[in-house]
Length: 328
Image 1 (tube, rainbow, N blue to C red):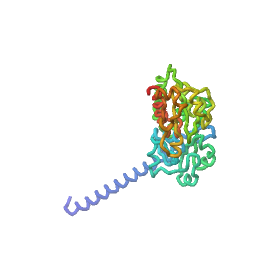
Image 2: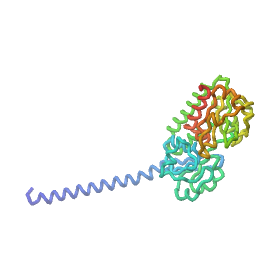
Image 3: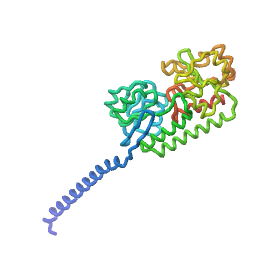
Image 4: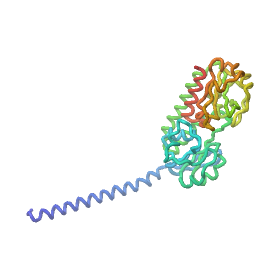
């Protein structure tokens, strides 16, 4: 090849290389563009029947809203994309979502902000019985799934419902294996607590403090699983506590004679006041109980017990405090 022909040859080779590169880029872009719809098409729609209706999820959720702390905890456990929560009362172990500016505040626990939700454009909304009255409006914004947990524990076995719901979320989010693993951790915690309570004679009373007044929670209450699943013996025969508990007096507590007294300070949570302690709870009738005399008055982590009903982190924390009553 002559010296004069070499530049032209190099130019031709360069042009071919550039053209080949561009063709390669176009091919990769075409593959990438085709892959996105293919990935979405691979998602098998999930249909869930629940107490408020039937919800169908046609694509994997990428913007999830949770109005309940148990729901938020489940999303956190599964590593799901949280786009919005109600930020009025957030359990301490989930504060990172309250503090994250990218997570929208979508209203209060019992009053969703529909305008903000429309703007957020979520693709899945999770609610509990506390938000059930808003289901029709929420369903018009996005597929809305109701957590069928009975806060009166009428059928019992609340933690079985919690596990089933977790597994359902795993299917919806494409996290089935992780959901099964987390459900197994719930079983492990139940076993751990039952190994402590099994055969023990102690009887316990669960009371909620609200601005100087008390209510008790028995087997038919939001904390019923502590009795029917975790194996704690109730100090009171009162079973129908209702959503807000059965109003009681200091005389009731004294006559129930609990060996262990679990105290949940609602006022500390809802009004952000200092929590109760032995000094502020002290009165002559309570001092007569075995729980008081033996140092088995357990001041529960009220944010967990009151704000989070049944989920893995919630159960782990409540379970540890139940055990504390037997070991303190």
